Each structure stands twice: as structure tokens, then as C-alpha cells.
Length: 210
Image (cartoon, rainbow, N blue to C red; front, side):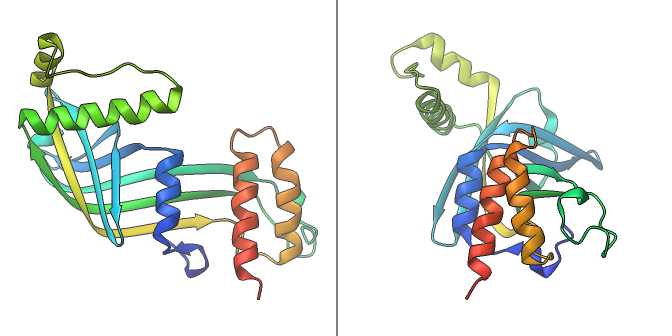
């Protein structure tokens, strides 16, 4: 991923926040020599610098049979930035751009067919997401045979991160007056992530101040 130094983020607390915001990941590998991607919910664990993701595929998905060297992408918020918002738009001949936050995680996928592993993945995903939506449905493979049988239709994976790259493109290459103006304009820009990108820009700007 092309990442100019002023957009590079290394604080893993920011990865924690990205995954909390959106744990629906893109998992990219090669299958039969061709790029292949699955879009799937994932579970996330971090112990200091050790980062682990877990998830599962439907068994007919061929990804688990391919090259298991993977790139997992966590997609953060994003928003269009109009050059009309910059005070120096005429002087500097500013052009449109896009602000966003994204994380790339490289690692080797470890495939599992073990029933206990699959049950743990599905149960944990269920608990996290049922809590998120305020519901209480439970996956019960130990007491319900119909639930347990469902596990035969999936393949699980675990990925321990070998390399993590994060890009937080939040106008850090602009003068403060431009950044302040964009922060002011974004919340009312009719963009789904506008207010969130403005909040992230404010945090980055505060970090840069002495």
C-alpha cells in the first residue's frame, strides 16, 4: 500500500478502533494463480503487539484450498474532500481528494476443520454481533443437534499478523487553516462518514500540536 510518511499510522490502538468500528474484512489470497477475495466478519484479538484474527468460510468457497499467504483489509471510514473548502484553494490550485483510514494485515491463514474450533468461532461471532444489535440469539451446538450439524458446512481460519500497515489519510499534508475548514464542513456535507472523518482529523491535528 502506497503510504506517504505523513499518512502512516503505527499506534495499534488505532487498529483496535478500526476493527471495533468495522469488523467486516476483505481477505485476499490467490487461488489457481489468480487473486481471490472473500468479504467476511472477523474476530479480533490483540495482546500488546500480537494481533490475531479468526473467521470462517462456507465450505464450497475455494479460498481455503488455495495459497494461504493472505492480506486482510480492515476498511475504516472515508469521505470526499472538496477543494472549495480550502482557504488557499486559488493560491495553491487545490484539487479534490478523499480522506480515509484503512489497515492492511499480512499473515499466513491457518485452516481448521475441528468442530470445537468452528463452534468457538461461530459462538464468539454470534455473541459479539448479537450484543452489538441489542439482541440475544445464541448458537448452541452443545445442546442443539441442528446447530451442531451446521458446522459441517464451514471451514475456519486463524491469522497471526506478520506485518501491519495502517494509512490514515486525514489532510496531514495541509496547513492548519485548511484542516480546520475541512473539519468544519464535513459534518454537514451529506456524507455517511463525514462527521467521523472530521472527528479523526481533529484528533490527528491535536496530536501534531506541541
